[in-house]
Length: 394
Image (cartoon, rainbow, N blue to C red; front, side, top):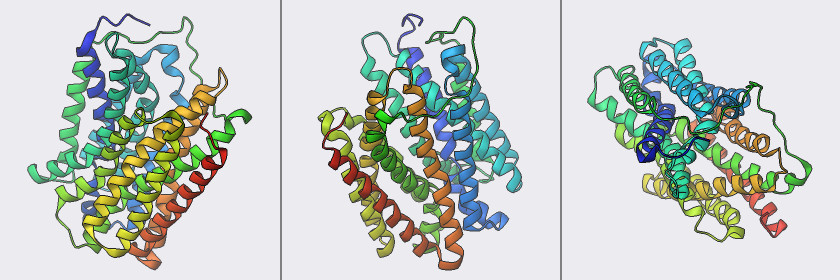
């Protein structure tokens, strides 16, 4: 590893790059209702568009997961920014479904690269003696960027002409600024003498399964609701609650779960180690149950409060689960186990959400959404029972 002589400037450049990538992933959120109106997309098609992003994330995780150990962090960070820029350019030129799907796929690829490489790189960029700042910086850039994306998109819709295209130009400018800031930053990691660019394997060794299963179920249920809130909430707020055209409100509500997850992840380290995962799962369960009730009651303040609780629980549980499975993994398997954990999370963002689109046609968006939230609640409850039965946290 290079020495940390680069200081706070390099650290902030890494955070900016990370945040701009994650922000780009959720910029389209408030634009989905506009796509539906302009191109006649059904709710099923909107969820399929959203799921294309998860396909890109999983593909990049599996393909490039170990690459930063071979060629260094910086080439992957630059490559991720290039893919994010390509995604925004494709969106800016899109005039129908094919380019919209391609834009989402490219965005997912950029996020997948940064999920593995940037999380480590930002920690390495933190100045000497500020390791905690590195961890918090990566957390804030990751979930904070996802949370700010819908708000960024909503502001761009309100402030700029041509809301189907120009918001992506605004994001392209942000990515360009991040690239300029990151370019002179020294390589924070090490490069292998003879790089071998192999795909990332997936593994859950037998000694990890006792903690991986409940943590994985919790991650699955938590990211199910993240996917639901990001892809379906704009339509719910517009069609069910009659808030069409309230772009900033829609952006703020849909980004709230990620912002609160960022808060939860920052709080996770302050809890006793043995209580982190159960506490996070309990809060997530309460939040999911409240979201289910709020959807049924069709009451926005209740929904917002429920999202706050669920988001904080999600942050504590997700980071707690990640810490737990990493600590329990035998030497030489950590990266594969962590990759498997992230794949579980991003599968949850895609496939289950598409079922809402499928079910919304025959049953309506409201019943489909309530059923989806109820299933996520049941999975979270199962995870909580399993971890409490274990009676410890490895």
